[in-house]
Image 1 (cartoon, helix red, strand yellow):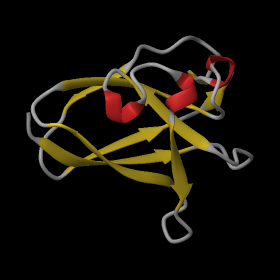
Image 2 (cartoon, one colour):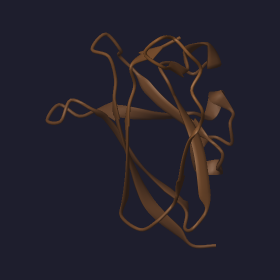
Image 3 (cartoon, one colour):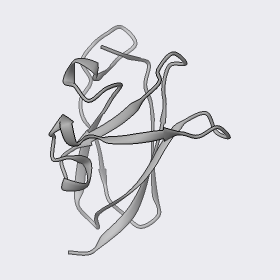
Image 4 (spheres, rainbow, N blue to C red):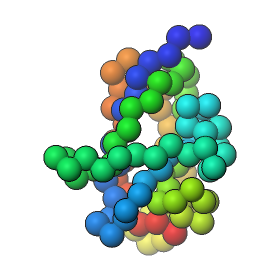
Length: 103
């Protein structure tokens, strides 16, 4: 199966020092938080970013974390659980997520 580059850009609260993505494909850890992918802070844009090779045409689900534990998963602005983010991996795709708060 062919792979394609997918870029993740995450906006997080200012006090957050680390951001990870963990998801449904091998390139995002297969839902194993120990294999979650760390994003790097971009000084120019102020977001956390990473580019991963993911299976072209496959539906990918993921969550954003502030640490490699499900106890640090993203939450809604009122502290509610959020559904998984989902997209189909396509060439040149940029996935942008804004996180209100973490657990």
